[in-house]
Image (tube, rainbow, N blue to C red; front, side):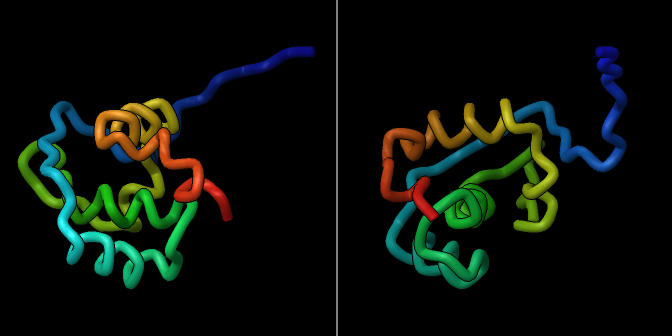
Length: 89
């Protein structure tokens, strides 16, 4: 088997992330943005509400192209990765 890794030109990249602790309004906004109250989409919505990427807010749609490693790191830093119910769809 031959596996070739190619560059993903549509990947959402950044150098720094600033995050703040979510408030209740962020959870409500994340639910409205993602259309879900749990799972990966909800977490991405919450990240889009509470984080700045290179000093700028990122859209939910942009964050869908985030590297999986980055997503896991951010959700862990926000202490969301331990919330089993949030990851269930």
